Length: 407
Ligand SMILES: Cc1cc2nc3c(=O)[nH]c(=O)nc-3n(C[C@H](O)[C@H](O)[C@H](O)COP(=O)(O)OP(=O)(O)OC[C@H]3O[C@@H](n4cnc5c(N)ncnc54)[C@H](O)[C@@H]3O)c2cc1C
Image (cartoon, rainbow, N blue to C red; front, side, top):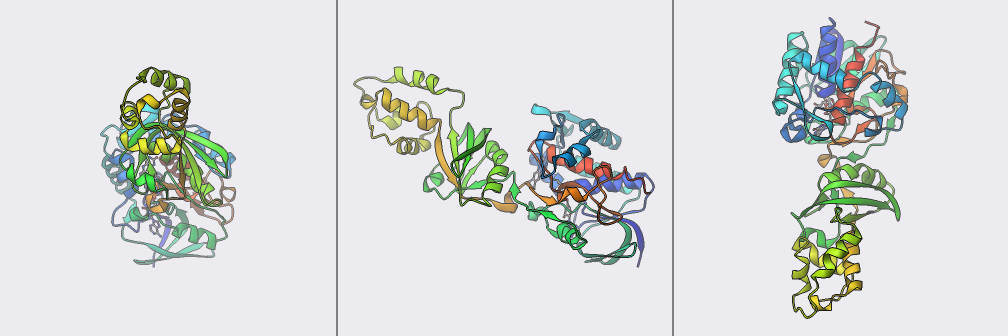
């Protein structure tokens, strides 16, 4: 049985940064990964391009029960700290819109391959196909039962992530190890996830995409809204605006059977501007069917729904008047859709909740409850917005561990 110095559970974003920085500082490091290869989430991220970070790091892009903890971690650890780390690997970054940063190659595989090369170069022992089954601590020694036998160490780092995307290694196991050692879990919900609806009309609109605004209501109360692509699917609704809204929906669905979305299908047009666009189009004696008339401004699959929700009985263009137009305009800017579920952790990019951060030192990421136990990445009760913020959290919490002065 080896008495290893530091073992890291999980070779994802956070685990790789901890391993590299610690091994560079001279520590003996073993990185255990249950998958057959490291960094599976990095590989699929950003549609294979890896939205590695965001240039505009801001506290309000992160969500946690304990924002003070997030603020303390981020202090001095915004984008330049991450850029410096990647530059040290030879990985250059480029900016796309809204501060989103990508590897210059626009290939996530470059990120993983450069991380892996550096980890091996500085002597990290990477063990894939090695799932940790249990963790015990006796005296100053951690004893890990794994699918490749028993391993021991004096310092343990939990970078095993969240249950999001189990097909890529998402798991609850790190939570189980930590709670067994006395840590508390903040409830987890899928986030950055597609939403499901039981409304029958949605299936008929599958494939329709609009650049709109989705407003969220729960129990009749307005919660928030997001702008961007809205994509109707055969299970419900997706698109960037919906992913951005999903955190709020997911947490609300823990208390309510459903939430209501109000979709503005034409946000670039105010009600007045849209009315002024439509009114002059009325030909007084026209036999043109109203369905065809509406095709001049919106996708035809949405038209029956717009007519139904506006309770319009109008069939022909000549029957239109200002009142009817007002009803149609109102519906185009407030199409209602109830959502009753999410696509769950399988469809989610991240999870809300995790290890209660009040039990962790934000300077060093060490447990306040258990000596020589560290956390980094998504296992903690912190999740970020889409746009590179989740990777930022993983990288900087990994870098923070290197601040530990005990070594
Ligand atoms: C499809 C998808 C796209 C994404 N795109 C982006 C993006 O473009 N930008 C962005 O900022 N974020 C993105 N994310 C989110 C981002 O990938 C995560 O927030 C980030 O990977 C978290 O890093 P982590 O190291 O904490 O956890 P992970 O990367 O999940 O790594 C944890 C590792 O631990 C391993 N593990 C778990 N349990 C055990 C065990 N018991 N024994 C051994 N190993 C174990 C897992 O197999 C996994 O490899 C995306 C996520 C998904 C699913």
